[in-house]
Length: 356
Image 1 (tube, helix red, strand yellow):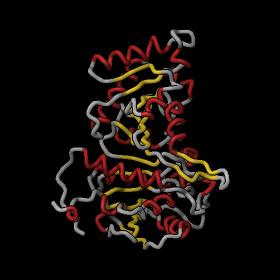
Image 2 (cartoon, one colour):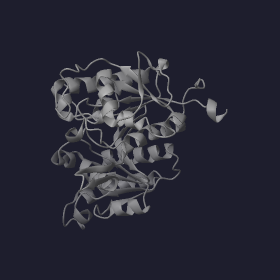
Image 3 (cartoon, one colour):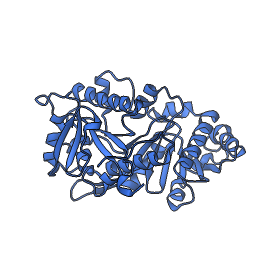
């Protein structure tokens, strides 16, 4: 098959909360050089939100509103949009949390899941949602990961943050630190080590090198600062080793991420949300003191354990700069490219070539 006739996967991009930067980074990302050679990206959102976003970021692109993805043009210079028509433009206020925008962002997600389950599209990239807004709209979950796992009936899942060759996943996700510590057990940690091993193999890493940090300072210092390492973490690691998994730990949490960044490990299985997210964002985000804003926001998250492909840029709605056209789209671009890479590696039904 020639390069020009190669099947380009359909990637649905939800805009996230209409009051945040999601619409802007979505339309910006579609201007990335070579993106349309890799895939056929389209936005799931609202024309009344996307049109102002195009003006805000000052790009020259036509909006092609469609009722179904097969009607897209999928060529540079055109933004194909599945218009949900669920935002009242006269009531939309950028930078503001509201039930309307929370409800809309949830509808984008569920529409994307519907399209993936019926094999209309090949993967989903989600823009940032606001936890308070979706709660105002009646959602009981803390974020995308929980929404997807509940909708798809998945019990064993986690999220992986990726910045270049630095990867981190989490045993516990969006919960208080107190609850996270209380919920840790040998079986849960072992399951996440297995999931990390399996997922990296799917990404092409033949023998993943996995690290598990300690929970306590200095990994407990032989019980001096806590006994979770001895009672919970080490038994999980030993069980994983017995299964043939290459895993080390508990590695002191103040050094494990430095080693991972240096190439000693392919992934760190962090024990709670901030243990993994803080070093990840430190590596991927850059704050410009003079401009008083982030000038780089790199980092992509993928949900592991799902039967469908879903990635997202690892940043929030950034309400404080929404509508100003200055949001950085690097992470969204990387999330789209990662979705394509995962699609290309996963077994899938035969698809017809793309008709250009």
